[in-house]
Amino acid sequence: MPDKIVLLPDNIANQIAAGEVIQRPASAVKELLENAVDAGATEIKLLIQDAGKSLIQVMDNGGGMSETDARMCFERHATSKIKSIEDLFHIKTMGFRGEALASIAAVAQVELKTKRADDETGVYIEVENSAVKKQEPIAAPTGTSIAMKNLFFNVPARRNFLKSNAAEMRHIVDEFTRVALSFPHIFFSLTTNGQQLFHLEAGSLKQRIVQLLGNNYNAKLVTVKEDTDYMNIYGFVGKPDMAKKTRGDQYFFVNNRFIKSAYLNHAVMNAYQEMIATDSFPMYVLFIDLDPAVVDVNVHPTKQEIKFEDEKIIYAFVQAAIKHALAQFSVTPTLDFDLDASIQQLSSIQQPFTEERQSSAASTSLFKGFTQKHQAHFIEPANKTELKHWRDFYESSESAVQSRESDPNKGDAPLTIHHSPVTQSLPKGTPYHAGELTQLLSTYIVTPSANGFILIHQQLAHERVLYEQLKAAAHGKPIATQRSMFPVTLELSPADAAVLGELMADLQELGYTIEPFGKNSFVIQGTPADLEAGNEKNIIDSLLEQYKHFSNELKFSKREKLVRSLAKQQSIKTGIRLTEREMRQLVNDLFACEQSNTTPEGNPTYLEFKQEQLEKMFKG
Image (cartoon, rainbow, N blue to C red; front, side):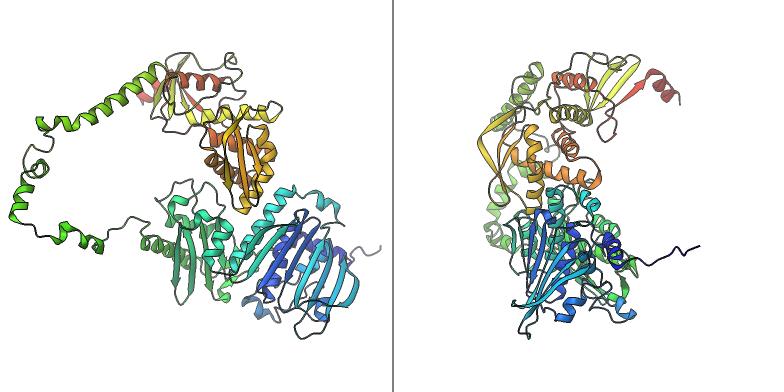
């Protein structure tokens, strides 16, 4: 029988390797940017066409390559960074594995232009399907320009798995952000389809963070810096009030290499314990420098997961450094026994406390309240007039509440519960029986059932109602839009701008009219008619945060994630008092839903307590 085992041709072997290294356009962006950094460049420009599907080009002013190196760099396992096995455990460069350019050349059409400073001419090479098609000398500036065109042109099945342009562009921006944050002393620019998205002058780390993540962080960053013999940590963390509902702005770098580490993230979360809500995430950009010999970066194809020789030391050090930084900048509660110098300038401190002043102070009702028995709650009759305006304020507020209870249409209601188009006919078997409704803890609604009572969670119930209304709107029943009398301008970070650009068409059907207004700016021209005006900016900010959360956690369609995000973001929150009418409307709308017992994420909207259960509970 003939032998069965044969060696794979180089081009097929390269395509298989490319499956690990180049998963999408953003993977190629990462490899090319890191090579430019390793080449010693001080200026790096990234050009993108068609979200990287048509063109990814990186131009740098680094050291360049000789003619031989330019030809060799496309070979498998070709690298200038490793000579022996010992070098693998002392890596200080970004790219080192020797498969990046070979993988790119296997799945794209590549054009390379490169020149060293001492060479009179540069070299131009064309590579397609791992084969060199053209090589010739050219005039070129010092440095390297590498362009990869038509990604996955020879692997159509892989190309079909790519997402929409907006989604792929978001991944490219993520990779660009990570490299640009690592090297703030290098100039970076990103241009997509002829429009410059980023222009990042060389500067400090703080300047680079603000440029990339948004101006809202400018006054909200706390410096972290701790040095020891074993490791150094430096960077910035956000103040607790900047915590978000998503993990978006969280960056860890080890020896300037971006990593993902749930273990180290847990250390950061522990440092913020009791300062932020349990479902919120702090912002941080942290760099850890330590001996490469105690780190293994070669445990994952993308090099984003690493192993430490002693994880417990790193964990404790990160947690302690952040706690120290937050305490040092008076973010955490502290007792400060040092007297503020400005207090010394007050007249009450500088002027002597004479006997006349002492007797005058001792005769006041405030002094008596602290020094004499039964004076703490005593109010002199003569002073009743001074408290009249407080009583008027209290009585007017109380009467307003009573008026609102008797007529919910009066005054400013805290929310609007939208009417479902099918609130009258409830499905058979619904446990709800129209009866008296009671609100508990400004969170739950209690209503009688046939054989007990139902406990409804107002936020989760409203989320289910809104989800079904929005889903109907997204499938052919658009929500009415109310045009804003004074349109609101929205300034976003480039990453958020890419997300909003992807969602604009779907938001239009859900009642939001949003138009681009220059670089990373949008104008909110209209919102759903039943939303209160004046809060448009916060609504869109919250929506983007919620959408990114769903994008990270769930594998749903774009429209499904958007509908879920809107339902969660617009639902009434716990802690809000509801009138009888609002409770009645919410309960009716809930039990008119196709699936009333759970939220879109599967959490229960209500619990039913039956008489038999209650009796068992009391009997023990």
